[in-house]
Length: 228
Image 1 (cartoon, rainbow, N blue to C red):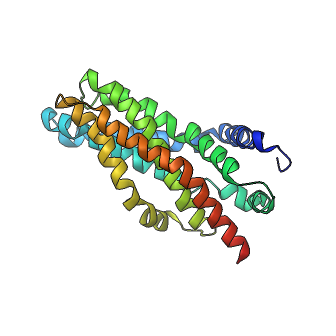
Image 2: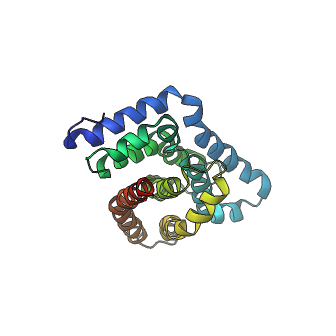
């Protein structure tokens, strides 16, 4: 892994982390199980108020998706930190951008993407109009990627910390607000007959910025920790 060429660094770390994730299937399924259970419990709390449920359904799904992704975000670098491979990755002369992007992509594929794919099916239970399911899917695919990229920064800041859940939430949750606003607006715009591609474009812009900035920020965090 250390001697992989720069062109293959992204693919190498992506494959490696995907293999590790699929070997520990139970841990990978925990965020998805949490998401499904919480969303399915929401109709029970509102009872027969189907109109109210339909109005709040997009916000419910997005917030539950956020909490589900946050549930696993803190563990992105834990195994590498514990077995020493994270230190080996940092001290290599290669740039960390591609390896970190590969690790975050693998984490998103194994833990966050299933949430986005499952969400439209759960939307039928809330209930949501059928024409809102495709915007919901597209928005959550981009949104969960943004959640993962931001969560990775928090994970890098708290990687040596044992009880990191509260600290991670304290650092990252305020940064999730624009993603929640634009993501849920995709559905509300569609429901109001407006062009839902505008909030989707804003969400995509956030994603493009995070794809560049998140690996750079995490690289700086790890490099500075090695200097200290």
